[in-house]
Length: 305
Image (tube, rainbow, N blue to C red; front, side, top):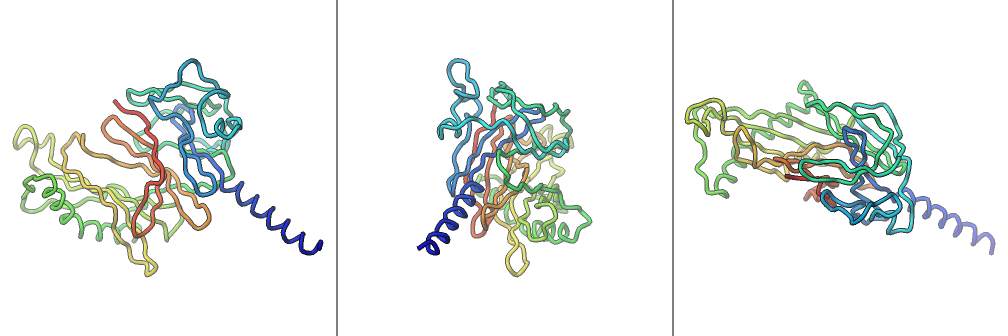
């Protein structure tokens, strides 16, 4: 009888440990050192972890009273978080309470931490944090000298004109016809750090000589911007998918861009943490980049004007 009980007990213990490792919350680490929790995962289910921007509770909220995934579970907000940023070597952030922060014209409740404030630079991206031992993988820019960049650029260039024409038809616009046709420039290509089989996220642009104002002025050129994903197949070939095409100009008001921040795996499933932003607006997403379709499994409003 005892021999039968022992394997059963071990199985329960292993299942319990596995369940613990698959419960976690993810937060955006802002340049001012504040943390904004946004995504909670629990045994296969995603949920919002925290009030979104402009979702202000009545009264004066505290760590004990704020509506959060922990309060819903009858737990306390964690006071220590594992962080990953590109500008700070700290591996932990300690929480001291709540803070109200601005995001565009919105107000956001955040966790005040002991992380130092960081002066934003144009190449910087937000950091990420987790309340668990989840392994976060940095997202890096692929070097232009890398053969992967050349392969990706060839594929993006080969598809660019067709994507541009399809978007012009969809918006009932006359396509820009310049000869010679301006080249396609890949502006950014992202992958999981150190992974040759990583999904790739890209941003590419074609800049025309034609200007929106005044006619013939080079100050505000017409542009086509394409962003999307390149996913490696088992054969090693890349598939371009989920392309977003924007027919715009120097101001790019219509453009919605993305900043991939980190990747992680739960079991055999891969996810990316992505900041999506546009003209005076942003959101935080959890994206599952797999074929045949790339899914956004959770999104949280991050502020707007």
